[in-house]
Length: 96
Image 1 (cartoon, rainbow, N blue to C red):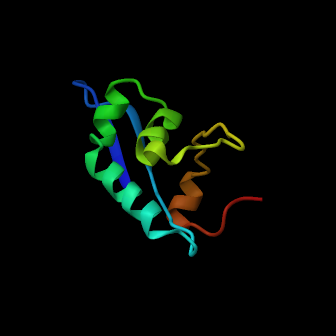
Image 2: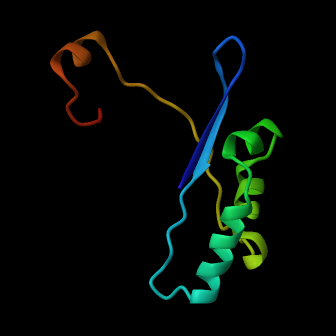
């Protein structure tokens, strides 16, 4: 797991991102070794974001020569369902 936030001089967030790698039970020792080596050689997520790398670029760096196949991509967005009432009453489950 690695995260990064690129903060610019006015203290606003220019970019934020990261990755989580979870091995499947059948992962070979060779695959694990390759991932560990690749991750050990990576620059920080913040540095990669600063260079304009996309999530796909970063994943390519993480996986190295293991190869990556993108089956699907989904646009990520932020939505806040906060209201003054919900904040003062606590947060029940997400709105329907």
